[in-house]
Length: 158
Image (tube, rainbow, N blue to C red; front, side, top):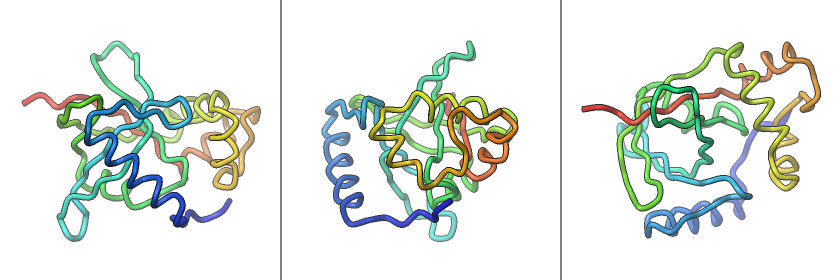
């Protein structure tokens, strides 16, 4: 499993996507709805924004989303863990969300399904960061989920 490093091409793509999302345009990265996640930096407290892929979460608990970390425990994951909440910008709206990190056992089937159902382009992009194949047993995916956290996001109620 490789350690994630931001390439110049990805930095440029993220900036372009950020502008488009802020303009309220629907952005889909390889067929997946893309939003902006803004979280206070765990050290600086300054807002940090990154484009993320959102998957709907239909668990019956109201409007929510699943957020997975395909590149591992990167800065936005550490910041979200520390803050427990964030702001989402999506479909022309900005709203607060709470974040609940799933245990590896809870997250493993969701992570496996997301990787298995990802477009070929996404699977190719993520492959170097995973040491488990989509057809591996769930126990292997539990180990993988400890390196690729899965969060449930819910609209915050004020």
